[in-house]
Structure formats: structure tokens, C-alpha cells
Length: 631
Image 1: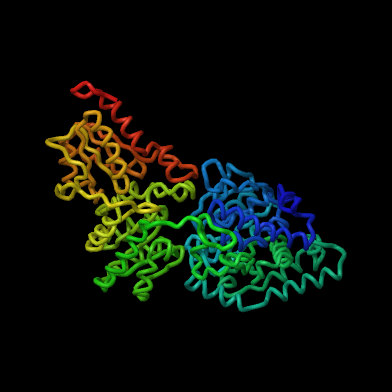
Image 2 (image 1 turned 180 degrees about the horizontal axis):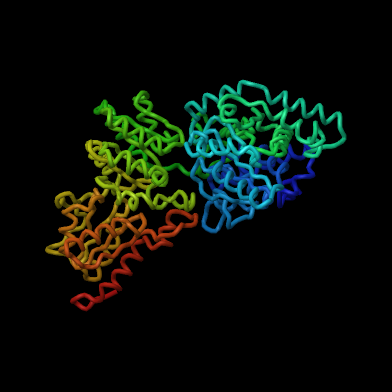
């Protein structure tokens, strides 16, 4: 039986010899490559933290001690060491989550996969344990160099620094990448630390002490210089900005040297206050295709692939992001005032083409969405037109800046929201189901929901022409389908399915839901119900043209991949009622709850966003037609 098969909890690691730990690390890497090749998932980050995770679980006692993983995409090794070995349905319905999950294990604490939050969580946990008198319980926060670029991490460090007896270990997993190579002042400082070798002196001291005393482990350190004086003397060296903050620093440590990591973590654990342990790791380590991924994007999150060659089994077609990518390059040639901002996701959001063509006009601010939006407002004030490209779920992080810095000041900034709507397999934190609801309360904001690739291009152009208000262009994850040609235009609307006279049913398709709307309409028409389908294109604010058509229909149906609460349907209903129009507005969208991970199709089916559900529901509500036909 392999070593890994014998590990059902972190306690099983304690008695392993150094050669056994090394062998286990190799088994884990082999397991990850083999398993993720069949399911897809976050491979590169996990290959890089094998020894680091082993060392943490050998030094600390989870769940008595608490481990908090920032972002969480590097928690596969943690899952294995806490007894979760069935990766056959990773990120699939009923299988393991791609991130820590409280429902899976008592060893998991923070499920949110948004970055830069771990230090705040950890400070709160450690402070509560101290207040409760649980001084034997330690808290560990694992944060990457990429997540350290987020402002929230520094807000936490600012507070941690003044709490000198907080039992908190901060492990900086420094692999020089998040999705892509980390940039900025934080990156430059960490790079300067990588060039030092102070950790060798620290560990030489520890190893020399081991030869002079029969006491080992944590107890050894308590025998030195009056219980903890020796610890304080050796942990005291600090570097640069960490010294300025007043937080003790150990490092940089070779993040693939398990004995060195264990010694450093033991020093930090027994110090009695907050300590930063700076570990240098290699993303993708042990698997050549992942380790040689220069941009850090391809193997950060990967689909199914051949483990022998590293080549993907599934070749994706043209995706929505490609349409945006190419149009930005064309617009850049036409508009010298056009600039772009990314929050550490240049390639995933499709700004790599623009960056290659116009490198001086792209700003990567790190994982700092709040800063991105306010900086964009400043750029707009000074005569540029910024395009801020982020995943839809991450717009939540910068709502105040969108509202108070951008909209209040009427700055012409365009927000491009990739992966809007249901994304599925990455779970509740990644579904882009909030953006239209939060955007709907922002005065002056205009939001476009393109139905196909051609509309992405056209509506992006329309968006960047607005210079006195924020604009939003949103589109979903995955392959973009065939273009849907409008039968005619009615003012600002595209009529996708027309009728003679006023329709019994007006179906409003929002963005990618237009295809579903047309299929559902065919089923209603087949049962004798006069049905018109329109694409409003610009769905916020509700246009006068849409209000006019809606007021002429007996029933209005709105289909959107956003929360029903506060969504486009709710906005249309409110606008109709303000005009004293009271015809029923039937809304189909996402319920107000967090959605478990599954494929996008499975989640859409679960929440009722299918043509069959929409048509069956509406046939039941409409009743029989004049000809006597019904559902």
C-alpha cells in the first residue's frame, strides 16, 4: 500500500521519517497529475505547495489549529492530507469542490475563493481564540505573493503588526505568480528578499542546537535561554517593509525543503506573536509542462489533458473572451485615448492582445479591484477612456468605488465583465450572478448584455463612446454560439421574433439568454400563443422603447442569468408600474441563494433556466388559447 493511501488525517504524517515524507511528496504530485488530467482543475498552484502543505500539517495540528488558505485554489494537497482521496468528480456535481469547503471537512474554514482575505480571517480567528483562553490553539494564514498585492491584505497586516502577542503564523507562498507573473512594488520587494540567504543562518543555528541537546521539536526551543529568549533572538531578524511594520520575519525559505520548512514553522509557532514565514516555491513543480508555463495561465487552471504529453484533450472553440480581445485591439488602433486595466488577470480576461499591441496603455494593478476602479476614474478625468476588464464576480469587490468614485463623478469608464451569469464548476463564489443587481442601483450607469459575438464587438464600441457615465458590457463563460440575426429594429431594440399586431406574450431575452428565449417562444407559438421576442441590447436603464412594447403585451417574460431579486425583470416591472402599467411580468433568473458547484448546464437546469421550464411554466400560466389549445 502506498504512503498516500495510509494518510487519512494529518495525524498520520507525524511519525513519518524524512525519506518517507519525500516519497509521499512525489506520490502526491503523481496523484495530482493523474487525477486532474481526467477532471481538469487547478494543477499548477497545487504542484507548487506539496512540501509546504506537508510541513504545515506536520508542525501544526489541524483542526485544533486552524489553517486558512487565501483564494483556496492551492488546497488540493490539504484535501488529500485530510482524508479526501476521491478526486474522480473534482469540481463536478456531487464531487469535491475545487476550493476549501466546510461541508466536506472540519479542516476547511474559509470557502470564499476571492483573494486577499486570509489575513483578516486569521486575525479574527486568532483574536477570538485568545479571548476565549484557548492559547494552545494556533492560527496559520497561507497567502500567495499575488494575493499580497490586494489592499485588504495590507489593511490586515497594519492591524496584525500592533498585536504583538497574537498567536498567528503568516506563510507567504511566493512563486512570483498568481494567474500571471506578479508585478508591482510588492513583487520587487519579495524579489529582493529572494536574493538573500538569511534563512540559512537561522536554520544552521537550529541544527547546531539539535546536536547539543537531546530535547527535540518545540520542547527543544523552550529549553533555550530562559524558555523563549532563544526563539525571540533568532526570529527577530526582519526585512524591509516587514521590519517597518514591526512583524517578525523568517526567510526566505526553500519551499521544497521540508525539513527547513518544518524548522522555520516550528520557530514561528513557538514565538508567541505574529511571524511571517516567507517560502519560495515553484508553481507547477515536478511536472515539466506546468513548471515551464512562463505566463502562469495555462496550467493555473487546466481542462482535461494527456498526462504524458501535457496536451489538452478538449480543444475549446471560439469563446466570448476572444471577441472582446480582438475588438479591443482594433479599437486601440482607432482610439489613442483608450487604455485598459486588469487586476492580475491579463490573459483570462482577454487583454493580452491589447497589451501586445499597446504595452504602454495597459495597467496591471495586481489583485486590487478597488484601486483599479478609482484609478480608472482618475484616468478618465485626465482625458483617457479606461476599460476595466474583470470577472463579473469580482465587480462586487469594488462596488463602493464604482458608485462613489466613478458614477458620482460621471466618469466615462467602461467595465467589461467576463464570466457573467452562471459559471458552474468553480462554485458559489465564482458565479457572476450579482452584477446586474448591483449595477441597477448605480445612478447613470448603462449596462449592455450582448447576445452573441457580433454584439460583443458592437456594444463594446457603443460603450467606449460614452464619456460622461460608467458603462458595463457583460458576457458569459465558454464558447460563443452562432450569431442571432434580428428580424428588425424597433428603436433601440432588436426584434428577434416578430408578430402581427400586439403580442399576447413579449419575451425579453437578456444577453446570452436570447437563444433560450427563442426556443421557449417556439413552444408557445406552437400552442397558439402570439409571442414576440426582443433583445433590449442595453438593459440598464430600462429604455422607453422596451416600456412601450411591454405595455402593449398581455404578458411580459424576462429571462436573465442574474439574480431575480433586483434584476432586469424586477427593474422592468417597477418601471411599468411607475407608468401605471400593471400587466404581469414573469421573471426567470437565478434565485437568491448560493449555488453548489456543478457544470454550467446542470446549474442552469437546477434553477429553471431552460427552454422547457420557461415554456411549461408559461403555458400553465397562460391557460388555453382562443382555439381551445393549451399545454
